[in-house]
Image 1 (cartoon, rainbow, N blue to C red):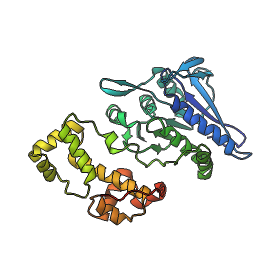
Image 2: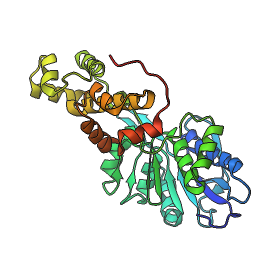
Image 3: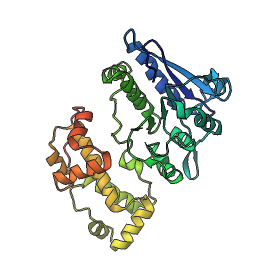
Image 4: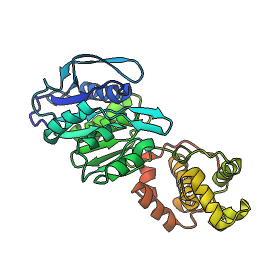
Length: 338
């Protein structure tokens, strides 16, 4: 980081064809707004777009961004190196676009940068450069399994909005770039500055990294079987019921073994994991939107005990129900659970 207050904080954002525009412009806007918020004598952000060649670069949306400095021209130590991402959706689902020229540049300058921040599928680019080995990291939920499989030296976390590990920062998909950029501003200038930026930009909530990046329905594969689709809807409406494998198998008129096999084949999840995540999501909503005490929430969501609720929160979200409520409670009334 730049130590002298009068020296701008140099941010280089790598551009390549097909990059997601919001991965680039979201953080750039946050850094620019932070410059307006910061008082006199505090280091502002100098944001530069760098790429393999000067000139316009087409983004995924077709909007063209302009490279003002090439990788070869970039000189000096970067305070923040930001790697945006891009995904291509094919027959096998979303796949990250790993630009070879960006990877080569990261290998050259990444080790000396003050910090390296990767947005969405940009984590795959940073991983390909070897910069994330030995670190915790996250990426878009659709490619997190691929990241773990291709880079076993990385401690991949599937759930967080963003992860901070040493000088490495990684974030979930696209709009999480704003949360990541706000966290970087908070690290540089404190929480009050970051919150003021969030207020001016009319961001509904500055989400700390521990908040889940997706809901259970988004995390699960769709099923071609109407009976399983109906069962999953029924589970969501009856979380306090007996949702054990024997009970669910009986409801489906299947043997326990056959039911568990079919459920996993159709959804990519075990029945127990699916039920736990559905109960966790319901508990999160109630903590965010109601004043119910955790013990009541635990019972209503089918956890059985407050201790189990705490255990699941620690295992899945790395926090407690009380801390989660302090961070995310919005005082929006929710309808009582049926």
